[in-house]
Length: 305
Image (cartoon, rainbow, N blue to C red; front, side, top):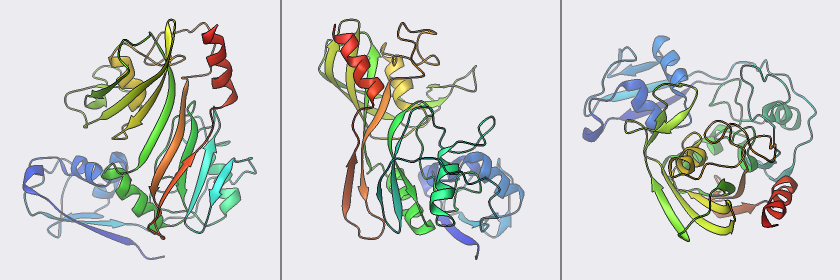
């Protein structure tokens, strides 16, 4: 398989940004750590010159990214039951269960969605995000349930990644949060970046990336509320961070909310219910909706009493 070449031309408004950050902002399917490795390996050139990760881009810089072809996967394929709600030659739509990690990482090298996908798809997964994340163009947290798309080839991956970049993908989540609302709907428009002290957490951060979450109150439940969140952007932990920032942390979220909840949940009450996008091959809009999981429905009934 041949290496993939990407060319980027820097616009005037992006002048002065570190090259690793610029590429991460421009090509959201590439992680910043992976970009830094490519720079170190000499696989990223600026005007045909090798640069360091702290190089600050200038207007009209020509950046060439030489993405190496995927190496043989070392992740073990596992016969894990997957709730597949749609599949064709380009994409797979999965309804992810609670507790399943999307891709292998420290402490979770087996039992992940990727392990199951490798068994189901064999060699038919995109390789852009490297050996540990084949097919993965976006993710949802371990304890978030619901719908996500997996890409079978690099063409599909690039198409979905571009739609994520320009924020044209429809993503609607259901959440149960602390504290009732006075308003029926609202918008949280606040940038998200790494927490200034706890680097494992995200936070509303003026130096972070633009992030916008629209929310609609479906039902106030005494000291809690059932809401729908619609994402205009897709930052890490966006809904969890944004709702916590306005005094409505997600029930069960021990990271951004109270350390304990009275219902002993396994993580936040958050469900990715709707996902819509333009199909990479047919160019037709497709939308998928998955029902609320049982734990979520049972919790709603308890809160209504």
